Amino acid sequence: IMFCWGDGSSGQLGLIFENVSVPIAGNIFSDKVTEIACGEQHTLFLTVDGRILSCGRNSKGQLGRQNGDSKLPGKTI
Image (cartoon, rainbow, N blue to C red; front, side, top):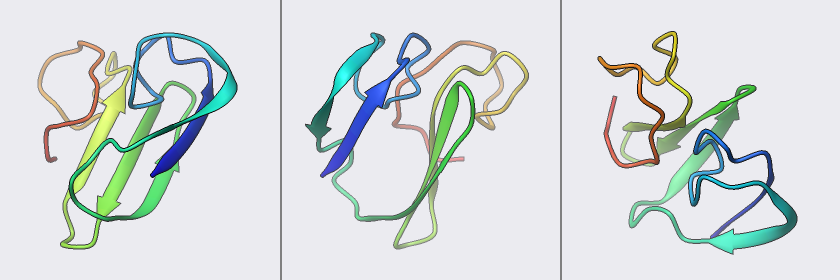
């Protein structure tokens, strides 16, 4: 379970595209996440099997994906 809060307007919280003022708990992945790295408007997740998942703003390719759309997690880099 991951707790998140703050500006989620670009999907960087991993759960919703909204601002969250009170921490909410969510189970985003079926895999275990060992590390989380947060940028200003994006977040990266490292799983126990070495996969990297990303979410949030992708205007400059910071999610490691082709298009510039903001995304919720799901695609492995």
